[in-house]
Image (cartoon, rainbow, N blue to C red):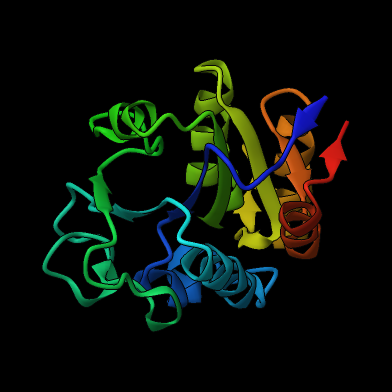
Length: 196
């Protein structure tokens, strides 16, 4: 049984950056337009309760990427912009654990549970959740606070953004993480409910 309580947990906000507003650049279609709003709801809960949180910022090593440092797209979206003193961890690959000190920070703070929101479901959210699960963290991914982009298959077939989102969540649910929605997370933390 995986328990979600107000102790020993951190919110990880992955790559909620302005570059992802350029929908054509990422595939021409995105699902879940409310993802950032839901991420903000969780961020507000964390801030109001002085719970640990980490902003992850993708800093592409490709200077032409929208997410490269120095490009406007690298900046955090205003809706979840880090406040002074909130930790920002920069990464250059899909996993928030590779090439960063995220694991060391979590362990030093005694955190054993992570709640993941951000962009994108199929890439950095999924990769981080998989690695968090493998590292032994009690991992939760918030389905309505993450979003995906459409993809082209290996034979040129089109996969819409919602299909990519749902299948990415299906692959990690109960294998690497527990998938919940925003209200379930907040209600569980208020009531200390358990989730199987």
